[in-house]
Image 1 (cartoon, rainbow, N blue to C red):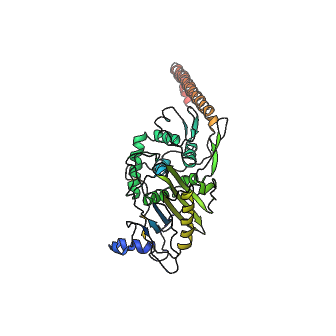
Image 2 (tube, rainbow, N blue to C red; image 1 turned 45 degrees about the vertical axis):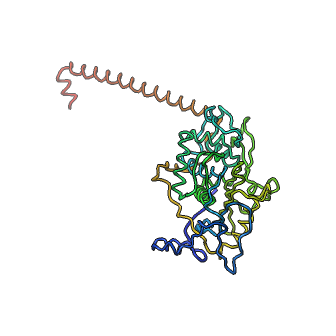
Image 3 (spheres, rainbow, N blue to C red; image 1 turned 90 degrees about the vertical axis):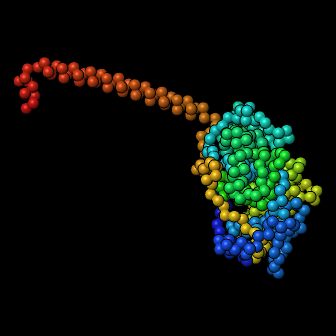
Amino acid sequence: MLAVPVPAAADGPHGIDDLRAAAHAGHPARIPDRLDGRGVQFLPRPDVPEPPDVSALSWMVTDMATGKVLAAKDAHRPLPPASTLKALFAVTVLPKFSQGEVHTVSLRDLGGIEAGSSLAGLKEDLPYRVADLWDAVFLRSGSDAVHTLAGMNGGWNKTIDDMQETADRLGARDTTVASADGFDTPGQFSSAYDLTLFGRAGLADPDFAHFAATKQTELPEEGGPDAFGIVNTNRLLVGSHGVKPYDGLIGVKNGYTTHAGNTLIAAARRDGRTLLVTVMNPQSGSRNAVYEETRDLLDWGFEAAPRAAAVGVLPALQPRGGTGVSQPVAHHSRSVVPLHKAAAVAQTDAGTEARYRWFVSAAVAVGVVALAVLGTALWWRRRKPSASRGAESD
C-alpha cells in the first residue's frame, strides 16, 4: 500500500498556490479562511452544488493534494473524538518500531484497560509482531494493542505526552490528549479540523496507509493454533451492517463512545483525486448515520472539487523532528522471520556465538604453541658453530 501523495498544486479558484502566496506576502486577509466561523462554511458558485444537509455536529471535506477545505461545519468545535484519536496515536508511535519486531505480550501490557474498551483479543505470554499489534489497532480498535504499544513506547503517560507534542507539531489547535486510545476521559477533546490533520499525516506514511486500508487478516497474521480472523470495523470500507462499501475508500479510522457518539475519518480516491472527510457525532439517530453522511459528503466532494472555492487551507505538512518526537525508523518489510521460528533462531545464534568463541580460543592456543616452537628453534641455532651459520647465510 503506497502512501497518499500530498504535493502542493493549484486547483480551481483560491488554489493552494494563491493562498500560500498571499500568506508569504503578508496579506492574510486575502486568504478566505472561514473555518473559524459557526455553521456550514461554503462559498457558493453557479456551477457548484451546495453541500448535503447532514446531521453531524461537525464535519469537514478536504482535497488531499492541495490542502483545500471545500466545505465544513464548525470545523474547530471541540468534541470527544472516540477512537478516531487512534489516528494520532499511530502517527506518533507507528514510525518508532520495525514492523517485524517481535514482542511477547505481558500481564503488565494488558493492565489499566478501561472497562468497556474495544479489545482485539491479545493473549498474555503470546509473541506478536509489531505489525500484528497495528492490525489490532486499526481493524479492531483494540485498546489492548494500544496499551501494549504504549508500554513499548515508554509507558502510557509518556505516550500521551508524545501524542500531544505530535498534535502541536501538526498544527492542531483543538486537541487535548488525556487517553492514548481515545476512551472517554474528562478534558479530552479534538475537532474535525484536527482529526483531518491527523488523517492526512497518517496517509503520508506507507505503513499507516497499509493498515488503514486493510479489510481483514488473521491475528497473528502468520496463523497458528492461537490465531483467529479479524475484520475491520469500518463499515464504509468493508461493507457490513447494512452499509455498502464506498467505491475507492482507502481508510482511515472510525470510533464510538457514549459521549462522543460516532466519529469517522475517511479517505477515498477517484480519478486521481483523494478526498478526506471527517464527521463527528451525527444527530439523526440512525445507527449508520456516520457512514451514510460521510458517503454523501464524499460524493459531493468529488463532484464539487474541480470547481469549488476553498473556505480554508491546511498548513503545509511538517516533517517529523525538532519537537522531541522520535525520528521515524526506515519502513520495514512485513516478510520477517515467523514467530514459531524465533526461539530456534535465538538458539542458532547462541550456538554460532559458542562456536566462534571456541574457534578464537583454539587459534590462540595454536599461536602459543607456534611461538614456543619458534623460540626453541632460535635458541638451538644460536648454539650451532659459526661456519654453519655462515654457510646458511650464503
